[in-house]
Length: 157
Picture 1 (tube, rainbow, N blue to C red):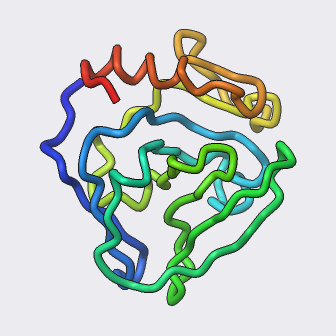
Picture 2: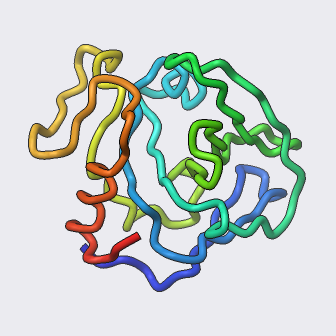
């Protein structure tokens, strides 16, 4: 798979918040937890994991919702303060990491998921590709997802 030339940009629905992803992420995967289902309004959300240093907020004001997640961890969810578009999470369990919402990218054609997490809470009709990295709950180690991304893209995080 070919990656775009970085940096790439993204933002919220109203355009108030804009950000720049400066280099290839660590991984891209789907999350099927109940929180992602509710917040995305879909059967899953797409996650783009990256270092916080790899993202530059260009404009806009963020609102934060501190949410106890399905795993019991507190997750800092970041939204546009104007349109409330969900942009990213700041996981407390990984202080240097951020989880961008792939749908907030201007172009997500390159953001092909390499796996799925929280598969135990997926919708019954969702069919998972058994060749992807599939995890029943919150991964204690994201390295299998990162490795799959590196294998797909040829880019090490």
